[in-house]
Length: 314
Image (cartoon, rainbow, N blue to C red):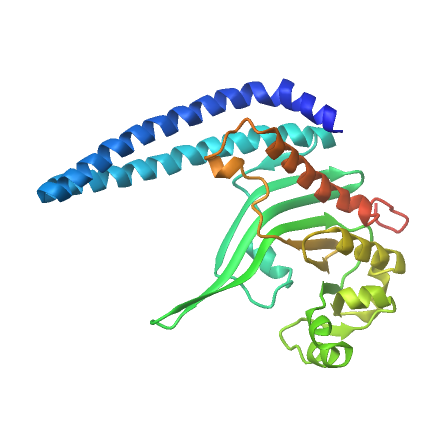
């Protein structure tokens, strides 16, 4: 796999990345030269105490930083389009990528995976396509809730990571949520269950599953206990436990409208160029990291056996 990826990098990516890297270095070179000029003007204005000279130096620096941010953002988008589209070819021609698109806030809130609805919301790096018989899409999301009392501001992180959605292989009309079991891990089974049952911010009602390892890792809420057990078969629960043990991220699941949603918590900005554009674009290790992240997400379909369509859904 590594040899094939390196060949793809050398043949299909490196030539275009060299052109982009040349543009990036040219931009940084101009900005560094202008910074020296404007800092010199600014220091001169301070030294001779002439306000127009000082303002000219400061204004020049501000404009230069804004232009650098805009131009570098464009280069970064070009880098991501180039690298991601080439890597996605590995999974077939049907995959698409848009660095500026993501999961609408309305859909994120409708999943009811999080008890707090964000008022600060950013999403990007949307990928969509089909793995076998399963339609999937995923994107990065940064969501938080900010409150202010006039004297101080509080920001609560709602979610940061990858929002993954797939067409589920069973039809159902109820809603089920499988969330990390923080309460039982911190307080033990007895107190943890009491707190979970008293959690009025969660939709549905608490349900106990028969798989003890699954119960130790997750807590389940559902609007229909019978359909919940139809969705969470013994095989799927085992696979969800295995997936949770392998993933670095904390996992939350929602089963809504015959779809499965997984929120993979992470502070990492997964598909950004090296050092957000301040590093060399010609970086094979960064491309490898992008590939491994894509592979991890694509593999979820097989990890959870979602292409097995022995029920009514096709």
